[in-house]
Image (cartoon, rainbow, N blue to C red; front, top):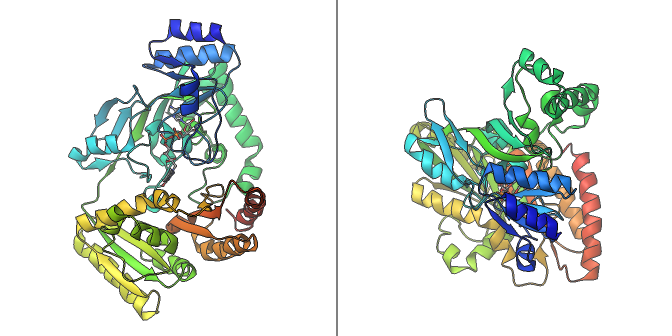
Length: 466
Ligand SMILES: Cc1cc2nc3c(=O)[nH]c(=O)nc-3n(C[C@H](O)[C@H](O)[C@H](O)COP(=O)(O)OP(=O)(O)OC[C@H]3O[C@@H](n4cnc5c(N)ncnc54)[C@H](O)[C@@H]3O)c2cc1C
């Protein structure tokens, strides 16, 4: 190992940290897992990344690129060299306001780019709840999306071009190619050519299997995006294979991403329900009104919010002690049209006796309170003083939105059969809830429950087409 450290220190300008404290610091992310890396490199340039990748490849050590480290299932940890792109590689290199795109380094934080391009009425579409610390490199690695994914889709829909460091130490530019450009790439005899050839061959040879097995839902992010390559060679963009690959195919050193226009107005309805399931039963009819977001908060989170002073004083939009609330947002440039949509929705819900209270939140600073609490949801949940905590291991499962209520009913029954209960929140609009069973990881019995629940839930997701 000393030779490797020596070579790294000789070749790179950034930091090389193989001491015990650094390794422990980088052994966790926002998941329940913990894996100590062999060392950490904090690059100052793409040349540093290139040298690290070359040295790691020569010594058969895996590379784990890392941004904000906010991944929920251990994507940014591993027993290799962690490459922390967040500390030095955070420059916004270019913005084209007319064509609405930006070129950035991978360590740019989502809120940072949004603050910068706001002056031109622009933003990056996908809006993860961790926007104040998640990096563009991490969004690309996870194919992230957020509360408004029904409107903006996922990161894959906004990546135009990537510079990627491959395992050979060669940097490639991946962008949309026409048919003749693609043929040119496939005919190359080098490593880059072999990648293009392999992706075309694998996706074509397995087209039927991919069509049959890849869930047809917006929030699918598991596995490599082979489904992007099955339908012909027009607009072939290998960057879409890197998106969602969790750092396993290469290191992104630069990204050209699409920007979207900020809407002039947003209005919110905070819809109260007596219990979780009546809230979920209302999601499909609400979707007909074409909102930009439908987010769920369950009673556990609402009650937790009231136990923390800073959050409690912002909870001006909740009446009484509802079993669950849905935050339904409309966005656009005509406030009148948005108010019409919200009023029509509230009248519809009242007419069909859906919901116990319907609170319209129109003023921007009041809407900020709602999103502040929604974004803090996970932290608030974890604040429980009980031994059993909400544990994320069947966290981001997604099914078609119209099947969400039925799926969660069965999910909840499985959890109760295991002698516990769960917290539920997040993206009801797209059938993707964060479900966190309450478990005590210091208890052997609960560890066994965790394993059994994971097995049950993976079967259940498949059953519902997720
Ligand atoms: C409270 C909470 C709420 C969340 N809400 C959402 C949500 O609404 N939507 C959502 O999608 N996710 C959500 N997440 C998960 C996570 O925050 C996002 O996926 C986020 O975009 C990850 O960014 P990051 O910079 O922290 O990435 P990291 O965790 O550092 O990395 C993510 C993946 O990308 C890879 N990676 C990082 N940099 C590079 C690079 N330069 N090149 C190649 N690969 C790279 C890593 O190896 C890893 O596999 C949430 C997490 C928490 C804790």
